[in-house]
Image 1: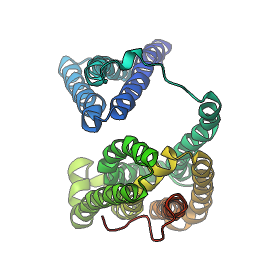
Image 2: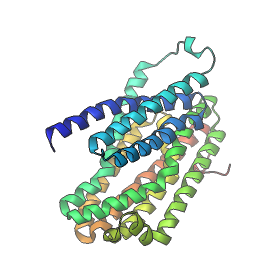
Image 3: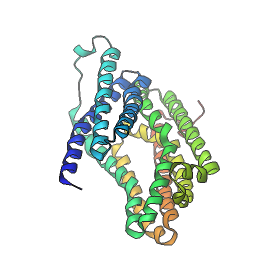
Image 4: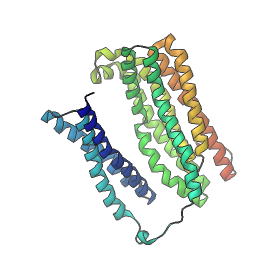
Length: 320
């Protein structure tokens, strides 16, 4: 692109990125104080609403561009941080500002590399299919697959809200040694995430052609089968997401990192094998299979960890 445009985009990103990071910290802090629903308001309600409003204003003014869109993200993040700051001070327990916490820096710093590796593996796993489609397929196939991936990701929209709500409660339940309550908590989280994802998946199976035509246009009708295949994979992801959250909050970052890396490698291998044979549907199948294998492994491992903690038998998902 043009140097001036690129510079403006980078400057807008530099303004937005620290605010987005601060917002995540505020959300986690409010959640840790026991106000799970309130913790989601700045980042998941106010910021997206402001972004849409600002983009609408830019569109009406004819000033839309990548740089102004990124600037809108930064402005929205700024106001979300202001609200988060207000909520954080209002909901903090009285006298908490004078309490000096004890931090195990060795354990904290030791957790950072595997968590960073885990997040990196997740990014690779989420993008490797599109990259391989681009390398082995055509530009048209990349467009079809991007539409399918965007639609299928909505299967996990409720799960992305449920998981942060669970994290602080998982820590509290483990701190009390209440394994029975922890199992019940994870069960409810899995049921809610799975049922919400199942609803979205069912809508896709019933109305995928109409939805694709309405939202993206007739030229993307070929994304239907990939959308349905990916939706099934993400449905398994949504249903098992609380098990991954439990692994994170119980200090098992290395297992998460290694399993995510293995899933990314499997995804890459399956994409290379299936895309030349089946095109976009092959890419969707490869990604869905790698997700299912990864998440079922985490579900089984979380079950074993829970049994080790509580000396009980039975699956992670139990009757509450």
